[in-house]
Length: 243
Image: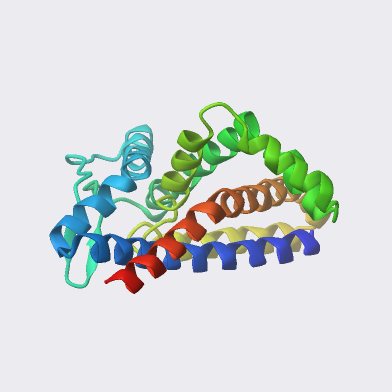
């Protein structure tokens, strides 16, 4: 589990860096090409629209399930000072538990979508397993086979749009510290009551499986994003040189 935690931390660090790099440079390339901030804003939002729709719908769905009222779903971009908000769902104030579930919904929905596409279309588990085992030849063969999948670029685009909009915003995670505190308190109580073996036998097994899937998700996202990142980087350099 410690090895899985280390792998997860590395993958999450790369994902956060990639997310920041992508949003900054995607906007930059569009601005270089159009020369107009408003046009660049709308094109940037249009490219990520499938992910934005899934993000906001997942908020709304979970809010309905847990009995929290919502307002009108908005998927149009808006400026907020120096920041850009790609979508928004007004949600009634609620307790920290339900707020945490609603805030984390896009991450869960996006993860399920990315894993499903990777598993069904690209055969990602075999690819990641080969690379993790150091079998680069098999990994490259799996990668070539994945690139020949039917309508591959449509699926790459969907993974790109979803994976780069599924991370929670600051407003989405405002209740998470309270939930984390309660979870830690429950663990401490169980251990003090002599239930440490129960935690290891049952919760430990669940966490191990969850960590493996999270590492697989992150690695899948980075692999699919890589050609898009290279394309954006090269396009930016070409346009910079020309202009």
